[in-house]
Amino acid sequence: MVVFAAQGDPRRTMALLWREQGAAPVRPGPRPTLTVEAVIEAAVAVADEEGMAGLSMRAVGERLGRTAMALYTYVADKAELLDLMYDHVHAELTADVVDDWRAGITAWAEERWEFYLRHPWVLHVSMARPVLGPNELDSTERLLRVLKPAGLSAPVARGIVSSLTYLVQGAATMVNDSRRAARETGQTDDVWWYARSAELGDVAPGFDGRYPLLTWLETDKEPNETVPYMEHEARVSFEAGLGVLLDGIAVRAG
Amino acid sequence: MVVFAAQGDPRRTMALLWREQGAAPVRPGPRPTLTVEAVIEAAVAVADEEGMAGLSMRAVGERLGRTAMALYTYVADKAELLDLMYDHVHAELTADVVDDWRAGITAWAEERWEFYLRHPWVLHVSMARPVLGPNELDSTERLLRVLKPAGLSAPVARGIVSSLTYLVQGAATMVNDSRRAARETGQTDDVWWYARSAELGDVAPGFDGRYPLLTWLETDKEPNETVPYMEHEARVSFEAGLGVLLDGIAVRAG
DNA sequence: CCCGGTCACTTTACGCTATAAGGAGATGGT
DNA sequence: ACCATCTCCTTATAGCGTAAAGTGACCGGG
Image (tube, rainbow over all chains, first blue to last red; front, top):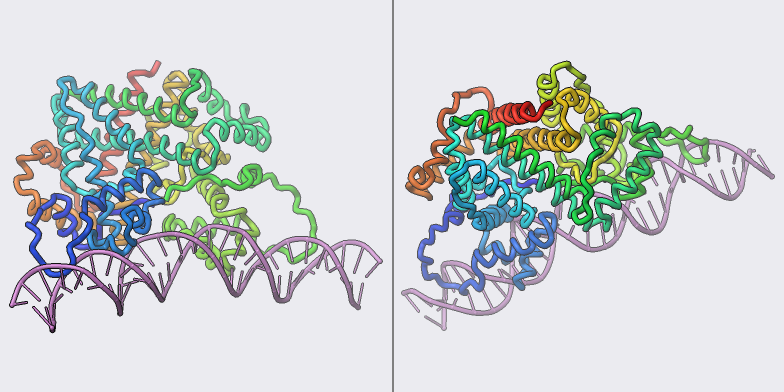
């Protein structure tokens, strides 16, 4: 369920994103009883609570005491609504510049991490046709202010920004999927793993002999009681990956 | 549209994945005219051609000259079919061990890259509840054989494997989404970007002043005529990210 | 040889989706 | 008062996974 930017009139969507408020002309007909903002906020609330799969025009309308069709007065279609939702929540990102680029990048990545756990549906909006709203651009501009002192070339910086994004999004997706799976199946990571490794032992006898390195890979895990298995693994690999990336940047830094 | 592993009887699915063939007992009633393999192959063909969104039980049935319901003779439900499809295509991964870990990891990542472009739908199967079929496990075991000589600890190795996976999958997702968007909207990356940056200029005058570093980031691009814009960017950032990761591994290698 | 149990496969039906089409009623300008 | 205009509603369509029930083919045992 990866979704693209609005396919309707792009100018219209861009104008909404950048809020060109054209001093609403006085027209005949009933006054609207809602606003685009109210629709966006209701939609974000639905998506936060029910996930991208639960985001339907009916659900958003219902939350506002309207029918699904009433929303089409305010947005062109669902894709446009998603663009507006996407930029709306990106306003939450405010991590500001720090002197040390290493600390700055870490802070940026940590803020994104929390952000994606707060709004899992954002990860289902494709980056192949970016939304190009002001709030996401602001956040990226701030990352670049942090990255600049490392003295990288523009092409290398592009690679770093992408890799950083892939890493945060990948690890956060793992956490979100794990939570969703637990909610939908009623089975925590740990219960699931316990059951599956038993079945794996039954169906693939001699596992340790056939997969010695996979067996080795699972060793030396620090005991962890509080966080579900997969969430913990994702968090640890996020930190590890970030550390490796930062080291790699240092190698290239001027 | 991220999908999870089968929720029906997990034992049944695991038995199918590891092909415990229980010497089909002779029973009354008509002989089945298909096989699980045929169903899997038809489903993979549909998914390769139409994408995950086009993979419906009706479409698979149609390809086999059957109704959607006929498939339920061979698989428990759509989720189980997806697990079987997932492991089936992972048999294509055969990259084998090389002496140099740097070359070995690169080869592994390149093979995965091609694989995800060949089967975009694989990226929509969640890793939070892994399929645990033999073919994917084999591929990971081979990666570990390559990684082992670097002399990492198991916890660090887990972080590396995850980060590597996030990187390849993230960049490949970008390419796949870009291709899908071009197909669905009839607009290539380049046409889209041209139109959108014009609109951005209209709607956000003074862009260069407000976003000096974003403007800088887009500089020094090597001219590229053959590959669509986004695909090229994704490929370049994949290579750059891989290079940074390998450097980071070298720092930690024993 | 035929009968009864079993299974492959079909048709139908349900609730869900986005949104096109058309209608009702409110509003403001003339 | 009239009319153009706009908000919001109801209705309808094609597609999804799969539950339920029906049809007819096939096999072993009497």
